[in-house]
Image 1: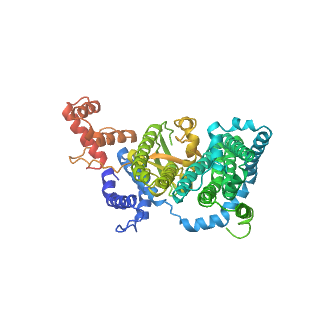
Image 2 (image 1 turned 90 degrees about the horizontal axis):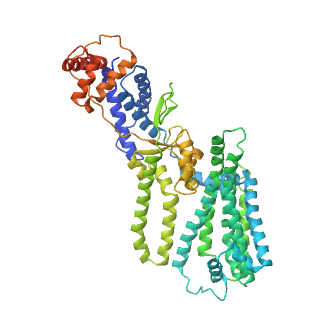
Image 3 (image 1 turned 180 degrees about the vertical axis):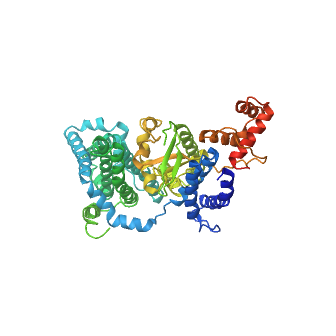
Length: 321
Length: 227
């Protein structure tokens, strides 16, 4: 068959396909276009493209058919998974299972965080001047202004402030967690550095505020939202380390494939980290800033820690996917 | 299949057909990123003024918006606009999975979370170097998510076959000759009349230029299918 006969015979089919494509590319679910023959036309197109290559039809025709096929392929293999059922399944078990599946990395991340915090805190308790090696001058006075009973002024805090702090916590904390994860791909170094740095800062803040007599307001402020927030940062660090290790020691895979596997495994953890940090920001902005009895704050904080760890350790152990 | 050193990637689809993708290099991608960056800056500027009037609550909303634009602007567009942020759409690019299928939420999220690593230490240096090394123009995020950035063709039209009569060629036609003749037909519209005559002279040195061109056109018509 000559090219012009070939074109004449299949032109109507290509036109029909193009019309369907134009509609599909504009809208997710076009209403007034008949798509019942789309898949059939697409399969025929695959065949026609192969024929046109085999028979040496012009390159322009081949390119035209290839482009048409590419566009059709992009529409046919579009996936549209329902979000809500997946979210429910995720919270019911996928997230804690994903966390437990790589508990070793989370343990390393947690140890890096806690050991650096403990070490720095011990050093500062031993020699208070050392706080200036970890936190700069402005940072120290900011901390004191925020937590010291004599310095801080919380009487005029209102809903607008809460909203501002909520925005700030989301922007800052989720950003840190995402960067901690991404830094892991540089052989895990980025994650580790962030964990050590954040641990040192927390240790320095806690030790310094305890020494200057602002320990109580600091701990009552931190304890409730600390559960989701610190846990989320540790999980982001663990996920980053897992990612980096896949490049350091890929095992029997190619490095690229090992990285892909690691990304697939760690992604559920990162979804969870995001949700945990949103939760933490809500608690931090709208609950932690309330002036309440220390007893109540410690109780609520303790419950928050307990609930979170019961959830992470035991949810989704039994039962189907 | 012969190996070509170009930016094309051949994929075998589940239908058993071979699909050719054309990969996008650093320059168009950088320009698409620049366009997106300007759009984001514009949104922030437009929204900043009314939010400023709301006082401290407004600056909270501003930070929230800043966060969403930084991390989820590309993800939302890539998932809901078939792999194209406004910048990519303007440059005719799209993100797809390694098998040519449209990118999903997970793929898009991985490649955009790891953007930070590609940015390291500044101006996408890591991402740029990895793209040069990678065989499929992928930055780190693309490698981890198994995604590609490709040129998506704009719909195109083809020249109609010529209407003058055909004449069989006076030499045995092989596949290469056929492609050359068809390419001559397809590009005819973009070549000047003089250049066409010049090319025809190469085919028929023994004829005058005008006669050579007329004959070449008839041969092309024959190859296209005219009798």
